[in-house]
Length: 344
Image (cartoon, rainbow, N blue to C red; front, side):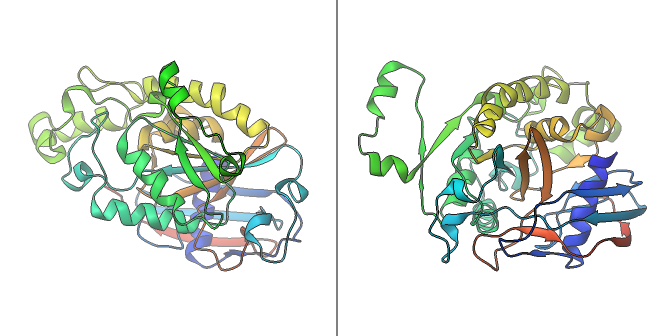
């Protein structure tokens, strides 16, 4: 339950202005949160709130934290050192971003693995996400094989302070690999490799793909459609359950992305609601009952710090106000009482 508590505490602190920015000489510390929640979601409505409960009721939050910062030396005008000069050993940033609104999100259609691009609002969300992470170092980008996730990653990186160029890696055959080689060392230093993987795709919604969600609920009943969408191990007709999606997404994360973090690389993943829910389930050690209450809004980045083999959730960064520094929780403790409304 500590993982769920941290989800809610971070968002509540954002909404009340308790999350702020610290200078780069703040001590690294740990955050501990205690909460008795029912469920939670990531809120797309307010720039200073990233999590709130989704059931009507109240949750008592107790949060305590020491100052913690993550520092990007390149982004700071006062620091001329290298990346490693201020980064502790075995510490790296992990950024998770659900793609911005797609054209089928806009039309309230089941999308799944259908390759649909971003809507105008989705483009704006991706750019806003980029502003939120503009000071966080990024060395590797992983996306799904679907265009809405790739568009989100590319648009987000247009806002990054380092101005590095994301380069999509084509390794499907020898010719694609050879033709995409970069022969300038200086250019390579200003590039970020982008790996597209189908394992990070949205879960496949089977016979629901392309159907209107409201019309489907009227046809099959709200309870049946809710079970298909929000249960852990029940798939829609000829589709994937969340459990099946988690098997491929988490396996890929552990086999391909964790080694990059272990090597000190800072990684961004642009993917989808269910593939990211699966990864968060693994990172925060959520149960199959807890993860079904987790909702991710489009275009909201989340930051984890990978340190000493553990993932530390840092919440959703807000727009930067100082170069090269990140959010921390002020004060020795905060006691808040928050009401919530149901997210549909």
